Amino acid sequence: MTVLDVRPSTTRLLYGLAGTGADLTTHLATHGPLPVPSRLRPQWQEAVLHEVESSGLTGRGGAGFPAYRKMRAARRSGPGAVLLVNAMEGEPASGKDEYLLTFAPHLVLDGAELVALAVGASTVVICVPAERRAQIADLKRALGQRLSLPYERPNCRVKALPGHYVSGEESALVSAVAGKESVPQFHPDKSVGLRLGRQPVLVHNAETLGHVALICRHGAHWFRQVGAPEAPGTSLVTISGAVRQPGILEVETGLPLGDMIAAARPVPDVQAVLVGGYGGTWVSARNLSVPFGPQSLKAVGASMGAGVLFVLARGSCGLFETEIIARYLAGEGAGQCGPCLFGLPAIADDLALIVRGQPQPRDLERLRTRCGLVAGRGACGHPDGAARLVNSALGVFQGDANYHMRFGPCPGCRLPATAPVPSRFTRKVEPA
Image (cartoon, rainbow, N blue to C red; front, top):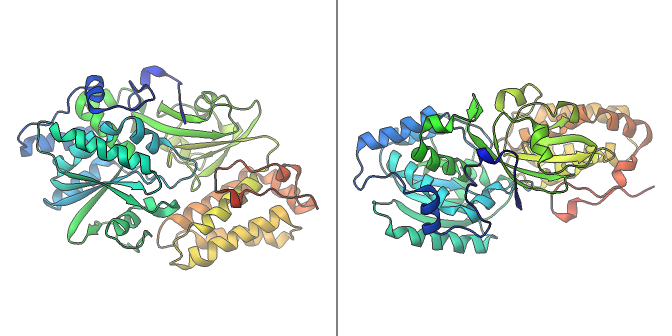
């Protein structure tokens, strides 16, 4: 992945990165020392919480939840909490957290230590997919460098975990760290915090913690100088698909989608953009002037999600690309509730029938009904995301749907799929 520039003046997380990774000495020369006193006091802890709250920082892992609320809840639970750094990034179209941990690991570790010290957490666990062996080794090396820092640090360690689509869901992460199966747990009362044994758990995304490290250095006012009022600051975004220069972009929230895509040099005729990742929504090219922010995206049925923009060129079949993704999502479910076990495969089958076969009018109606039945009934949000994706495709690519219902597979279905999923899902539709 390469770093893309839109407005270099708003580069914060990626500031000073030369593409070779940063050791602790380089990191401190770039950002300065971490503002942690040699002896912790409740006043300092409260000041950190207040600064994060005043900044308006929202989580960058997908949910967009105010970061300070999680911290306050962990502080109220008393000392001995465990902070999990969520760097699992199971979303195939995303690469931002991996990039940040590779080239700015100490920024993430700064934020993790600050949050842990502020809420009284005794342990920090950096959760990384097991297949990223080189990154795991680099993170362990970075933790070793930090032993010389002049303050009492929490116990920090790296945990290699099985990587799959739902592995970054908070309860799945807790389960995996506890040595159990890495699947979401049924957690109906969200007001009750997660626990690791008897210890309360706080989970924050890697990018979110990088922002905390900068907020505690420069202040909430500095953080709010850029970005949308309802979600201030900058955000990392991964852009791929029908672009000549895919990569990682740091943008101030509120920037129009079209300006962000332009940085990746898109093809001349963009048809639509998948916003937020595979649990997100398709947005028509007619709406590329929409700002990248929670309220403005909500107006077109989308959200910031995991910071993913996947660009689709005109001439490609949006339903075919969606079918590829839907089949992948059906295979990535936890397999522990009806919507995952039966609903998602049925949705993928219905979509395949419309894309690849000779569908009947009732097939399209059945697909819409199944999407409605799945939403809100799963043990986690995975089925909701898949249904949302398919529903948005049926709206944005209505012309493709009409063609398929009348004539069968369209010319765009015979092009190779471009959505980043394992190769076994990407076969094109062969001519009859």
